[in-house]
Length: 244
Ligand code: SAH
Image (cartoon, rainbow, N blue to C red; front, side, top):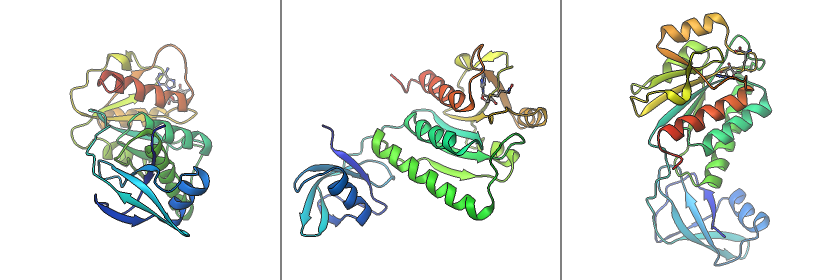
């Protein structure tokens, strides 16, 4: 079986020994039942990973870091997902799956038809929870770079923030004429806007058009928002050669 992977929020170096933080030690020893000498892999989100060995010393749990492996598992296409706020369980799912599908970053945007609106204090907690989901997904799927997530206070700022690095702006919408599967990716960066359960309203579509987004469809059926985002990501990654 593949060695279990753990995120460590600290600098790491080969040929050193570090004590595992309590929650990581608990997961390794109590949940996964790893034993002294078992292989594990550490990563800290800055790229590459560290094959290591578990060392249990009484109550304390360490990792002996053996080496650094600069392996990259990122897509050649850097995609920023502009996701309208949607119901909590759906958003959790979208975030997890978009990380598996190699999303580069995620910007959450309020839209007219978003049913979720969070006050400032709850927002920070919610983003923290989504960040945990992202890290767990990275550990599971082998990513060594952690997608960034943030929430913008308006749809307009979210759309524009995602267009940096000359990204092509793509908005998916059932009525669009062009299929996303035919998009010409003229840049290594793409911004992908996905609507909430009730879709974008006309003013939002007009705004997106004004700031430079082009509209694409995902075929003849209306997909639920969570299906739509994941399908769009998989389509773009396929076009970019990332699923090969
Ligand atoms: N009645 C709404 C449907 C919303 S579906 C409308 O007409 O817009 C929720 C979101 O999923 C949409 O805003 C869109 O971003 C995406 N979506 C769903 N089905 C799609 C399709 N066939 N093509 C493109 N986008 C789609």
